[in-house]
Length: 323
Image (tube, rainbow, N blue to C red; front, side):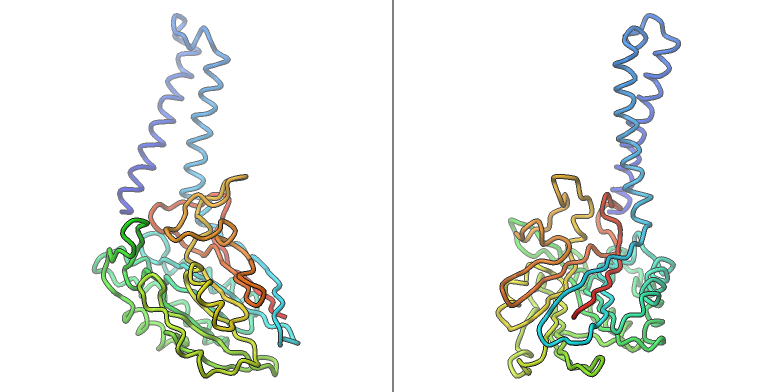
């Protein structure tokens, strides 16, 4: 698929730049041409062509290389001393993002000095056939080496599952969830698969629930049945479409990825790349209320899938200040 999308980008760039060059040549040299006789319209058309080419080039090869820091303060009951959570998702290592980019992500996280790190799934793109994409995740070990508790969950790409609005879940690729789990747990990362752990940060107990893949039909909340309801509960669930289900489980805050923020976000339009599940447009990025007791924060993630496209929506590392 990478070759297909890159070929489409190349065709578009050639199909805009070459005609623009021909038109400009005609406005100066071909005195009998329409372009020569209507230079104002010709220059306008050339401007539009070059604007399109520039936008495609920037969105394909420039903005996806960015890595910005987004900060968000969130209030939840039971937290008296602020907790700093670094949230990242959708590394999608493989076709476009490699270990070098993962090193940049780790450097940004370490610079934020978080209390904990949460990784919200789709660690691999699972699109390179027999290639072991988990090797690109090696830089994550530096988080644990720095003494930062780090938690991770599966997304849909670990299970090789995509989604069709008409057909439901579609398993397009192989299941590499075990390989990802086996690659990350030896680093010291706590990999949660429908599990709950209780941890203490700044003298405050919090529960962390890590849900399995909603799209793969593996998400279950049984582990929450016997947990303590009097302490704050933060859930790490890859797909925000599961937030309605999670809100029934007395969860204070849900942290998700999956949407990539739409990858392309246009003014007055919002996310262009929509996921198959029907969720409100404002659930694609940022903080929203699911109900009066549960909040949802969705990160745009750090990687891309399908086309190497990012526009008005750069890759991000999120620092959540929970208080």
